[in-house]
Each structure stands twice: as structure tokens, then as C-alpha cells.
Amino acid sequence: MALDSLDRSPPPFFRQGLPALSKLVLLGLLSLLLMSADHRLGLSRPIRSAISVALAPMQWLALLPQRAGAALQDYFTGVDEARDAAQQYHTRTIAQAQRLQQAEQLLQENKHLRELLELRNDHTGSAKAVQVLYETADPYSRSIVIDKGALSGIVLGSAVVDVAGVVGQVTRVYPLSSEVTLLTDRDQSIPVLNARTGHRFIAAGDPVTLGGSLELRFVPASADLQDGDLLTTSGIDGVYPAGLQVGRIRQIDRRIDNAFAKVHATPMAQARGRHMLVLPPVSDWPERPVKTEPASRKTKGKSAAAPAKAAASEGGTP
Image (cartoon, rainbow, N blue to C red; front, top):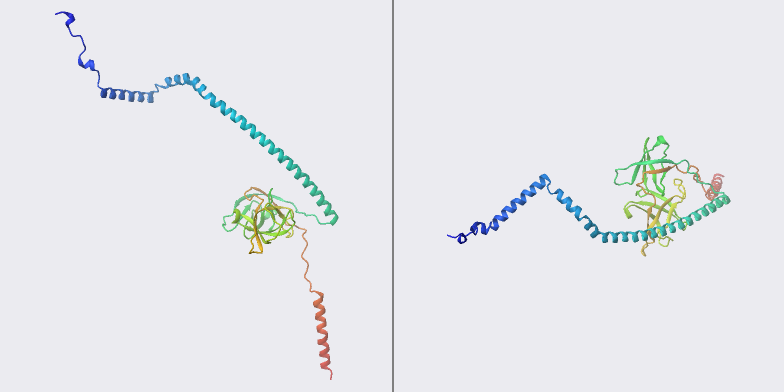
């Protein structure tokens, strides 16, 4: 038999190869084995590092337009913000300079008028710096507790202020602490003066409206009040020195069927502040005049007593 006649083709098993299902199972097991080995031994870390290093220039080039656009946008935005801020600061500086000039002029005029009219100067005494310890736990009152009391010279009825204006009044004094009732408490009231018109009012605490405000009582509906008017202490009660800022008018409700308007103001002082000043009551407040009986009543009494005496003398003569 010739050698060329022999069938040298591979057997059918090798000619067909592995079935598709066997390949899938084998490759799946190999994938799980590689993943487990990579998770435990970190075999792919060098490969990943090499790939990331190789792709870094392409990533940088791909992100370059985005970075350039963001930088350009930030530049123009920063320029606009800087220009607006400079304009605001310039306007604010001019306004503050104008207010300072007006304040100095008003101080000079006030001093001159006091000298001419021989008005007494307000002496508030020595103010005491205090710190707020905590707010009282009473839900029906608005009050705070400060860290100084009778041993530090705190007097009952003293006014408490901060950098913005009046905070409240000392209503309870203990040896080492004191309780201050805020202006927004419903039982608190303070005489105020409209700085624009000079009209006087009584402001009472309203803890509900506007989240804690002051209500001006018995204000005529025709009163000259505007939103934003500044209210200061009038100084007519002998407790609060005159000229302290109290609040600004924020709500005016005038009704046709009511002769009085409902006016609410927001306090200037921040009751949540930590540092405050306690001002003692005005010491040189004049005493109230003694009530005397009018002379007309005395004259009438004497004139009525004279005829009675005459009638009695006439009736007694025989």
C-alpha cells in the first residue's frame, strides 16, 4: 500500500474542537480564577498603572478644552464680581461719609441748643459689661439670664443694650446673676420717639407677630408713619436714657372702620448676642410734683362756711 493513500486527517474529535457550552464554562471558570487572584494578589495593578500612564496624555488633551473654557469663564466672572464689589464699596463709603458728616452736624447743633436752653445733660452712669448665660425655660415669657447680679452692682429696672440698641430691662436680680426681660415680651413696654417726625408712642411687646416684634399702641390712623422709620427711646420714663435705638417700623395696617392703626416694628437689638451692657436707671430724674388742693376749692369752702356761721349766730341770739 502506498503511503499517499493513507488518510492523515485528524480524528473527528480534534477536527470539531470543544463544544460552545464547554468553552463558556471553561472561560467562565478562568475569569473567576483570574478575578479571585487579582483581588487577593493584586496581579492587575501594574497593568492598570501602565495603562493609566499611557493614557494620561490623551486624557489631558481631551480635557484641555473644558479646562480652558472653565478658566476663561471664571476669569470673566471674577472680573464682573470684583467690579460690582468695588462699586458697592465705593457707594457705601460715600453714604457712610455723608452720614458721618450729618451726625457730626447734628451733634454740634444739639450741643448748641442744649447750651442755649440750659437743658440738663443725660447721665447714664457707669455701664457694666455682661454676658448672656442662657435663655429662660419659661415658654410664656421672653427673657434671658446674664452673668452679673446684685454683688456686681446690678440694679432692678436697669436698661440692657447691645451695639444695635435696647435689648430689654432687668426684672429680677439675684446675688450672682440677673434676669432680663426682652422688649418682645408681652408684659414689656417702652416709650419711643419717631426720629423722623418727633412723635411719641408707647411700644409694647408682641412675641407672635413677625417672629417677635413691638406694637405701637393707640396710634391714630392719620398718624405720619412710614415703613422704615427709626424708633428711639424718648427718655420720659426715667428708665431708658433718651436716644437709644429701639426698632424700625415694618408693618402698618390702616383700616377705614377703625380709628387706630396697627403698627408693628422689629427690634434693632439682637437678643441672641452674647455681650451686652447694663445701664443704671437715670439718677437725676426729677421727682413728681406734690398734688396740692386748688385754691378755688379752698375759697369755695371758706365762702360756704361763712354763711353757715352767720346763720348759726343769728339762730342763737334771742
